[in-house]
Image 1 (cartoon, helix red, strand yellow):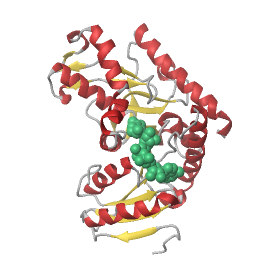
Image 2 (cartoon, helix red, strand yellow):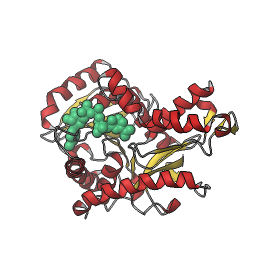
Image 3 (cartoon, protein in one colour):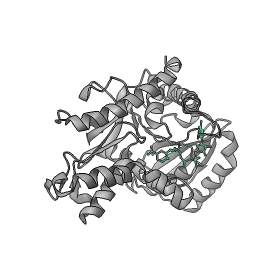
Image 4 (cartoon, protein in one colour):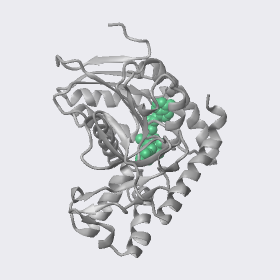
Length: 339
Ligand code: NAX
C-alpha cells in the first residue's frame, strides 16, 4: 500500500469485511477526543461493521493527534481497521463515506464576526474542493465547526460535482438539549417526546419549536404554560452552551460528539421520529434556496427529507425569519468567496 507523505497509517486489526471510511477533521480537539472513541467502538454503524478513520488536523496539532492515535490503538477496538492521520484534506477525504467537519477556527482576541466568517470560509472552501475531488460520490457530510450552517454552505458550493444533499450542518445538539429540557419539565423520558424540531441557524436565533410535538401521543404544548415555554424553555436551550462553558470551563464536547453521531447514524440508518438537521434549502417553507437551514427532517433509505407542509403560525414565522435573516447576513459576509 502506498502511503502519502503527510499520512500515518497504522493497521490495527484483521477484520475481513471492507471497512467504511469515516473522516473527522479537528481530530485532536475536544469534540474529536469524544467522537473518535465512540466511532471506533461502533456507535455509528454497529460494532460488527469495520471502520477506517481518516483524521485531519493542522500541522501544529500533529503531536497531540499522535497521542490520540496511540490511545485509539491501546483501546484495541476490534472493528477499527486502520487510521490515516494527515494535514492534507485530499488524503483525509479520499473515498470517505461519512465526514465529520469538526475543525474550525475559533474566535481569537479582537476578531470580529466578519473576520471569523472569512477565516472559516477559507478552511471550508478548501475542504469542499477536496471533498468534490476525492470523496465517495455518495458521501454524507456533517459540519459541526462554527459558524456551522454557513461553513456547510461554503463547502457545498465548492463541491459542484457532489449532490447538494450530501451536505448538512449539525443542529442535533440543540434538538437533544430541547428534548432534555422538556422531558425534565414533564417528568417523562426523552423517547416519549416526538415531533420536536429546531428551525434555522445553529446560533442564538435558532427556534426550538414544540408546536407539533407530542408527549405519550398527546399534544405537548397544551401541557405547558406558554410563559414557561417563552421565558424558561427557549432561553434554556439557546443559552445552554454558555451555561456549560461557565460550569465546566470548556465548551460542550461529549454531548456535541454524541449529537454528531446521532445525526449521522439516523441519516445513514433511518430515523424513527423527526430529527433536526440543517440542510441546503430547496424552497420548502419559503426559505431562500441554498441557505443551510435547520428543518424538521425524517431519514429513510439513506436520505434526509424535510417534513413538509406543516402549518406555521405567525409567531413561529417571525422566529424562523429572524434566523433566516441572520443566515442571509452571514452569506453576504462571505459571498465574494463563493464560486
Ligand atoms: P477545539 O478547539 O478543541 O478543537 C478544534 C480542532 O480543530 C483543533 O484541534 C484545531 O487544531 C483543529 N483545526 C482547526 N483548523 C483546522 C483545519 N483547517 N483542518 C483540520 N483541523 C483544524 O474545538 P472543539 O471544542 O472540538 O469544537 C470544534 C468546533 O465545534 C468549534 O467550531 C465549535 O464552535 C463547534 N461546536 C459546534 C456545535 C454544534 O452544535 N454545531 C456544538 C459544539 C461546538 O461548540
